[in-house]
Image (tube, rainbow over all chains, first blue to last red; front, top):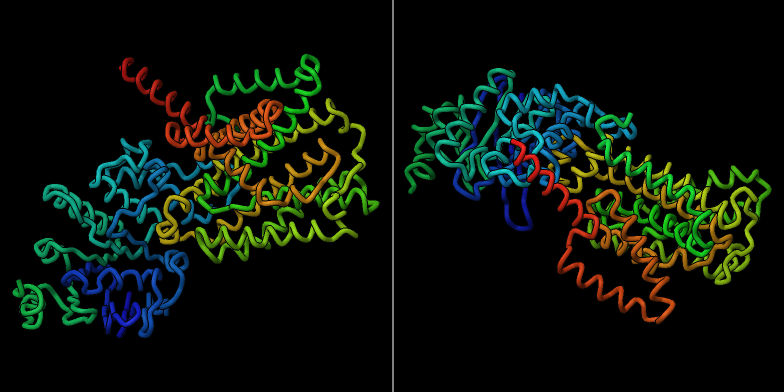
Length: 244
Length: 319
């Protein structure tokens, strides 16, 4: 479904992504791991169009999407969450998700009909699905960190994606919250038939959740395979797992 | 149509205010009617600015230009062409919107302060044009004695005309703000990056916001001509843009009605303190400084916050 070939992106002299390769098949859960600064977030930003690659190719469902702007890529069915909190803090929880649903239904430029009566069911269904329905009318900026991370995922779901990218969905969460969130993510993936690409620091979570794993180091893909294959890869053991 | 959008009590209060405003010209001296009419004109201008500044998060620092373009457009059309008058009045806001499109297209490529700088430069260009082109715009004399249809001229008639258009415009602005377009505009203000990630072409969306705001600024410009019967280059000068920005700040950025309060405060200050001293801006400055320290959310924003807190307290006691 998604193919990344020999992707390179540099900030000045620093090559943040320097030869990344990745293949994600439909319905798979794929994790990207690697030490801090390995280029995971940059890779995601390249896939979703927030950065333009210097060279290399990204194709989605056989179509070249490298260098397209984020809003076009989103409309092709790729939605994402961000590592750092990235919500609309002054809007209510409901509005946060509704804005995405409106965009998905191409209603964003509608000027004269009240938004509050629009696509309510769709929005509420998503909120119910992630368990935020009872807090729908609170201001999102006043939320706890954990709930804001969940809201991130809910906003991404508002675009009815086929392909979901989560950049450290459990960053900053307590162990209980982490377990609950990953349970939620897994359930959503199965229920909605999503293909999931995520990155995560907690190795246990990665190995228990992902179908396949891609390991990055200094911008390069050093291994790609099933959890067992990755675990046995010497380079990975040296670079990452056994390294500390 | 309004169902669920405003409270019954608020709606009743608004109708009451409107009724009072309708009989006002028969009760108070003409000078005050004129003052209220000019407050309405400035309030509409400030509200159109707040659409892009408060709700759109753009650095629209030279919004007065679109007001001036609207005013000059109707003045020039009325004095230099033989078009039917209603066409002159209706087309002026569209001329302002066109100016919004052109200036917006250039500005929107840049962000934040760079956006503001290029807008001030382009706006100043238009001001220089109006200031220098004696043959066409009357230069620094401006255009006087613009023929206004008798139904809208005179203090009382122009007051009614301005009031009607003002009410229609704020209803339109209210709907725009509550529409999908409005909530997406606010989402883009809160977080442009995230907004692109959910499939919104943010720059195009903001450009539409600028065009709409320019249109309403153009309407305010037309109302100004109806009230004053003249135009002059000061309408395009950046000082006016700064003043309406202060009105939004005074009243409250993130509130719908804030700019009206801001305009009323500012024009009243200028009128009543301006009688006693030409240094009225000194007093404005002190008030602004105090406001930023004590009511950073603006006057209207402050009261809105108070009311929400009280409502929540009542609701809690009720439970």
